[in-house]
Image (cartoon, rainbow over all chains, first blue to last red; front, side, top):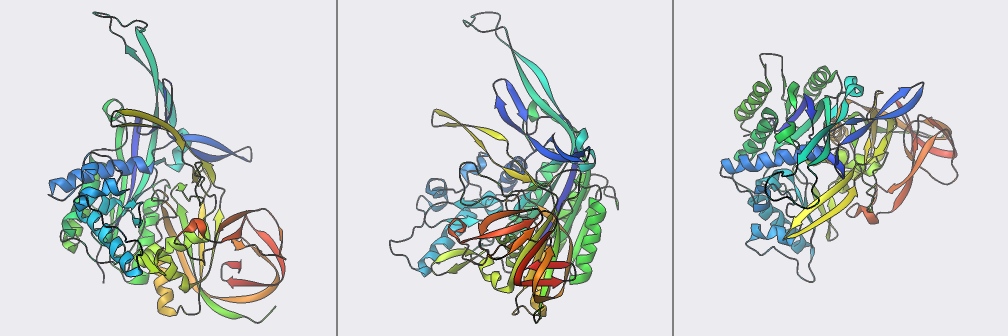
Length: 332
Length: 244
């Protein structure tokens, strides 16, 4: 029997009048991100556009919260990630603080042994120096290039399929006022109108977190840090905070979505297993059936948590139970 | 019909979570997204799950770094895919603002994705025909790894595996066959039906630098196509047939 170390979550949340993810700003009109949704009309396929929130947007929020959680547990976070600038160690300049200004380099005629040593040193240095890059991955695009795959993955948040065509995008009119007392600026209009597109939908997204890969080298599989358990705990707690606080997306200061999480399913498994996407109405049933199949076929441990079932009334109930299970397992 | 021999297979039925983001390599500024999953991406998706057993994502070969799929490639005789439903490519325009050391910069860019998202059902069937050196234990490992496929391409392209089946199929030589699975187009073969042909990296080659990998022409049937060619090698299994 292995250890429960792969977490997969399916989340549905209601968001009324939100501006969580904006693109294609043109003049005074800020458009909401939209994605194509294929319907059939008169026997022919037709594309309509529905609001969406990108996985990058959700990933950014998660990594900001991860930086905070890591620091609260006295774990290292680099200056860029601390500031919410997830450039990661993309080049020598951004990696140098993890190496006291001296990033390991290849010699002119490097042989295989030296290549292996240098890429291992670079990855290890970055992982030791920053929890966000340990969990969120990076691509060091120098010579030699060093790549670390993100230990978490997150889908787009899309309107659930059964109600996607009811999702709306509406421009909201706003006005910005110029000063009418004191010194007046030449040519300044008293009012400047601008528009912000707001979306309303029941969104769904999937979030995977591979706890086994945290603090572990992509190149050798060796453990690189002593504080693996604390790092894993920070990773799970960041996810808890993100969902509990609805702390993701843009324009939260004036367009905080009205609504909240309406469904949540989580699984903990020994090896990778992804919940059925919550964009489908049967996602909870399908996930449970698939998980039972995997358990029966391979004799693995696996846990299933569902909001609204077995006493889990709130998202926090589910996430607390997940953390408790990981503590009992010794994973965090 | 020629003499037959047997090989094991693993078939994974994937449900997309809306987005399948697979980049055309080498990338241009347009950063186009492929409409069909190439064989190399399917091998990579399976390899993630296999590599997690010991945590090593890469291998060092001939003085350079290769993805771990280079190692697992030896377990696989053939990779094919059948996609139900048509993907739709779309990319929002991004206006990127940067304020760096006192200087304000602005750029406009776009990033395409392929959306398998609509009122119909979308499914991706990924078939892995295992090589002769993959015994029963190895096949079981691949079967569990297939259940663990969690994304195709970028970290936004999540998929869930709804079903995995495995068994033994037969390699045959035939002159005509009907298939829904992708296959490599070769000279002397005629096709009947609707399909796309895509130049993509040869999954059997060195994939350390996919941009310079040799290309193969892969046929992706839209529904089913009839393929004719003298003495074609095909793999027949419980749920269909694939041109090798």
